Each structure stands twice: as C-alpha cells, then as structure tokens.
Picture 1 (tube, rainbow, N blue to C red):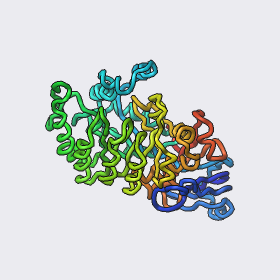
Picture 2: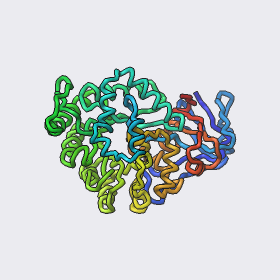
Picture 3: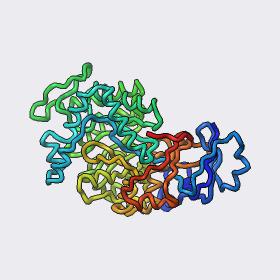
Length: 428
C-alpha cells in the first residue's frame, strides 16, 4: 500500500550520519517545515518539502493529513523489563515511608519478590500482562523496545520469559529486541542444569558460584542455540554480582555471538562500567555514579551509555547520571525508561524526555536524539529505524502539537499521538 503524509508543519527527520550521534550532532534534527513524506510497502521513499512531492501523489495513493502538526520518528525504548507478574505497590509505599531499595531487597522484597510471582505465572498469563505493558508504551509513541528476562533466575522461567518476548514480537506491531538477564540478582537457590529446579542456599551464599557457572556454561548456550536473545545483560552491584562474576557471564555470551549490555554504576562507582569498556559491550546502563575517568573508557571503547532517569525519579533519589558531561565528552547517549515493577514503574518515553531535560540538563533536541536514532543504534537497528530517511521503516508519530520541544515542555500531559508502524496506523 502506498501512502503520502502531507501538510506536515514540522517533520523532524533526524537524518544524518549512519552511526550514533555525539556532541553537537545530537542537536541537529534535520527538520523540514511544510513537509510531506511518501511511503511504499511500509518503507519511506521520499521526504521533502510538500511542494516538491505533490506531483508524485496520484489517485492510488492514500493521503493522510497531518494538519500542520509535528512528526517525529517513533520512540525506541532501549532498556525495559517488560515481562513480569504482579507488582510491588506495597514496596513503593515502604520506600515513601523511608525504606531504601537495599533494605527492601535484604528483607526478601525487591527483585526476588517479583521472581517468586513470575515463576508462579504461566506463559499465557505472562503474555497477557506483558501485552498490557506493551500497549501502555505504544500509546505514548514507543514503536521499538528492548525487553529483558531476569525475573526467573532458573531455566524454566527465564526461557518462558524469552518465549513471551518472541511471541509479542511475532504478533506485532511493536518490534521487540530480546535480552537474557539471568544474572539479575543472586537467586534464593542454585538452579539445576537439567531441570531448572533450585536447591536451598546455605547462609544465603552457598551455590552462588554454581549459579554463575550455570548461567555462563549452560543457560547462555541453550538460549543462543534457540535464538531467543540478541543480547545478554548482567547486574553488577554490591547486592547483585561482582565484576568478576559478571565477566564470566558476559564473556560466555560474547563467545556465543551475543551482544553485551550491562547494568553498571547505579549505586556505587567501580561496579562494571570499566568491564563494559574492556569487553566491548554495546551499552552500559544506569551510570548514576560513574566517574569522569570511567566515562572516558566508555567513550574510547564506543560503548553507548543508556541513561535511566525514571529509576532515579521513582526511587526518590537526586543523583541523576551526568548526561551533560557525557555529551561534552562525546559519548553517544541514550535515554530509556527502565520500565520495571520495582525501581521504575514508568512506561512513558515522553516523561523520560521531560526528566532528561529538567533533571539531567539535556536540550530537548539532544533528548529526542537519545530516544530515537541513538537508541536505535544501541539495539542494533540504526539502519532500519530511529530516523525518517529514505529506505527506513516508516515508524513515526503525528503529535498533537506543532513544535518538537513541546514533547518535553508539557510534562506528563496525557498526549495520544497518532502512531504509525511500517506505514500503518496502529491503535493499542
């Protein structure tokens, strides 16, 4: 089906170099005013001033009037924990009452609470809940998202979560990029290789090394063989896994041809960012406590920082990642939601844009680049989505406003952009 989007007041194409944007490039949005866009078979075939394309619009073309509004690429959410059962609203209340994230985890809450609920849920139950989460994101303009496992910590549940992500990708319309995050936290027992059953731990520590070895030597191999994950992630922190444990997991994933991502430096420095640079990871995520020297390592290794202001906001913290410093240093920043049931129950990319500007000092143009073209490169899809250029998939949003800066300026507005994926309007 051929279509033409006409009467576009401001077409934010983000056309440019075929790589992630850095420095001043983040502010170069390649905007075309009074524009039009032609689409054939789900892909963009022309973007230009409306007057230049009118002669190419014939009677067989479906015409969509943007009514003078702004069009941007669809958002690419590069860090989500989409699949989980239940919620942790009671822990949210405890945090408001003064309990810390670490205190809640030490008392058996946090990630392990969600692990218990997720293990008890069937694949179809998880699919139904994940579809609801996906639809929340889609309504806000997310057209591509990365989705992690990590609430199983045993073979059966980790594989079940990855199958749910695969099923959601197959049913569409949102494109899913699957990531294995079995090394999310230390499980309550050691997972058996064959059955995935967990034996009790002794003094909270026995079997820890066995679990890491099992993930590295067996689970990653099985996941890679079945093609269930494009990336492997791990959580490096004092209450999760050490640098050496994460090295074992990610090195195994790299040997199996998986891309690497890493939760790093969220609560304390020295927790994984240097390892991400050493191993050539695609991304290092969080980085609230990363030092300037560590950021230089990431820049020199070409690792993209994925910044997650939603988790800082939802945890009631004030230590946001040093986004302004990262831009000045030449890192190809990404902004994502970190949507999850504990530290960031925030599915809204427009809200991330506001936080990125208000709390991290990014300009609206820089923030928009970070949630579109740079995010696309960070999930391996920079050649296909993230900007509105000839040859790319026609994933775009027709907003209710005329200026892209209003995305960040009107904070938490219940906006409902018209969402198009592969040239077709979708309604969750």
